[in-house]
Length: 102
Image 1 (cartoon, one colour):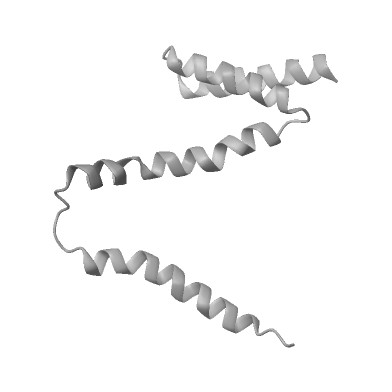
Image 2 (cartoon, helix red, strand yellow; image 1 turned 90 degrees about the vertical axis):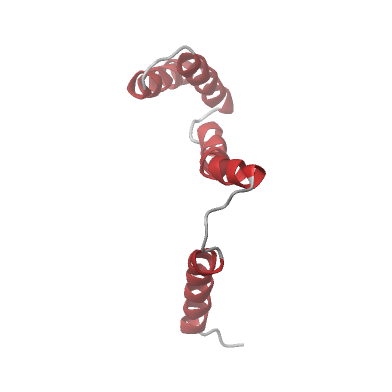
């Protein structure tokens, strides 16, 4: 069985293009449905969370260090810390917990 890499690339390009172009061509006027608008508003945040959450736990040597950093980051962000402060504190928590656990 012979695989044609150019065929795979063409199909991937067509699907990627269709996903981006079809909404622009099919939906020409403003969306007025409140449910659909709120759903579309939160899609980027949900997608980012789904991609980031597993990486937080898998990026460390022990999942406990990632979980501790996640908890510290959530607590700091909830209390109004800046993005730099949250990320720096999470790095420090991972460093200290990896040092203590290993």
